[in-house]
Amino acid sequence: MPKVRAAIVTDVHYGIDSGCKLGSKAPRLMKKFIRAVGAGAPDFILDMGDRISHRNQRDDAKRMKALKSHFNEIFIPLYCLVGNHDIKNLSREENERIMGSPGASYSRNINGYHFIFWNPNVNNGDTGLKLDPDDLQWLKDDLSKCRGPAILFSHVPLDNDTDDNIKAYASSAAATGIITNRFYYDNASDIRETLEKSGKIILCMAGHRHINRYREINGIHYITQQSLTNQYKEKYRIPAGTWSMLEIDDGGITVTLHGKTRLKMGGKLRRVYELNPRATEESEQPPPGGPLP
Image (cartoon, rainbow, N blue to C red; front, side, top):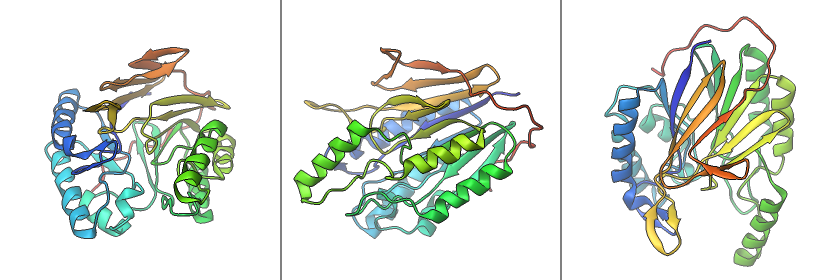
């Protein structure tokens, strides 16, 4: 099966500094990212959401358009996800018009692999992240139709961790007096069960958490990628500059991490990490898909 290469960036938070999000550094970092991507010529670019730090409708639209102008500099297909900051003041339809990528969930077949760009509810209000039943049904329907190995991208990670949840609850309760979980979906176990039953998913990638993390759960690889502009060290206003190049073929999955951070694999911090694909039944592969119109 042919190789697929994808350049991935997430949580750019373009335009203003907000806490540890150094959005004012985004223009320079995006220029560097686009130069590197252009030289590497991947099959597509993926933006996993939180393109801006929300402020108001006018400023959010202006900054999102400025971010899109960077992607417009190279002729490589762009796919996008919707992050929680992206829809605070802008609708999904406005995100779609600006970025040229669907605001709803969609999928594409590329070189024999099925890529799912899942855009479920990401409104992490006072009650935390809740998955709408319709979003899970869309995922089930899409998986039932695809034939080949599938890769799922979402803004919010799907590999909930008990310790992380406890920390999230404690932090939120201390700050607001209301216990919420804004890091994961409470019913992510239902999502993972759907993925596992399909027998087709080999990898899930997400952003949102502003960390680099890897896990394998029941034969599926889960990777969370650090923000492009998140502060690298507490005492220094230096952005992580994180982006990755994903490569998938019959030999496995390779992710090359760029920027100042590393991913912990097997007890060691690495820039390049290789994963074995989950075994899938041999089946006729769908024809390659084309770029977004």
